[in-house]
Image 1 (tube, rainbow, N blue to C red):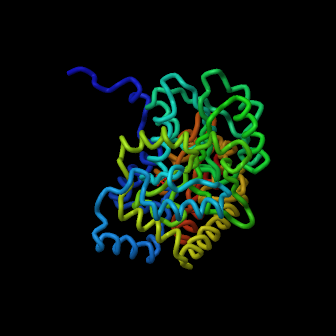
Image 2 (cartoon, protein in one colour):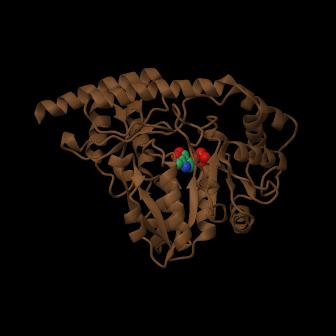
Image 3 (spheres, protein in one colour):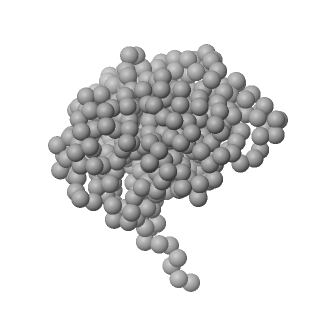
Length: 394
Ligand SMILES: Cc1ncc(COP(=O)(O)O)c(C=O)c1O
């Protein structure tokens, strides 16, 4: 038989997160205890009022396709939310599209907007699926390093130098997976000017925009002057409402861009699941203290994990948002890959190596605290032991 695998797919590996998860599963099947810091999925069951809305939707017989854009009721609720929280003014009739999670939104946007050979700027570190989807679209990822010492903000000079006549898009992830930090408004303003000057589009992945600690503020780049016309804003219910399995998110973009995006979305999925859309409508329009409870728990875990990393002297930006930390382990005489491999095999703690998030991030690892406080505490005890064992041999 011929080798049917196209060249572009040979460059796409199973994501590191899933590889670690599989190995952790094997260890657990062998009776070993594993603490899961690898997966970025809130450990909470979706709040009751949202589950009830999904059940009511099915009971009412809402089992048909919806408009390709999503139900108008949900789009109107999203428009209100965007207006109030993100200062984005999107017309629910033509500038909002409900998607099968942020992931489909991102894939549809990239596939719809790039031609083969176009260059797409990605941050290093950044959310790993961006690289794959750009390659599946036969476009070229161009990495720009973020500055660890500067709270993982862009080095705008390097960014400018990376722009060529083929640069079509920048993919932005703030709040960031994997670093848990936010790109500040001033940097976003400077970045906007660069995009305007060079006529570059932005895909702004804002999957974590509602998971913010203390008085940290998220700025949607689409709300900055001159950016609405060139930004595709992606948001999701997965993390903010612990709705990962519902597979529901959305895009806001100006009519001109949306008229391109909708055709890709239409050909890939037709529309998002109807009962998930009704559940998302409840999530946006009803109040519940369950969401505040989730935030409180994330915050407690964040404090515990950050303070332990600090106590151990492992450099790490103070997480401002999301539920990730991205410490640097080079002082332990190994890179993130070796650290993660040994931490899992010898101490039963699963983390994701930094190399999964960009070629220049090999000295880091991502630790997700979307797991119980008890597991976070046990994971930190194991981390102290691992670090002490390494240091005793250094
Ligand atoms: C930065 C970022 N964007 C998008 C997604 C996709 O989320 P979903 O498809 O569940 O909305 C994730 C999931 O982990 C993420 O971390």
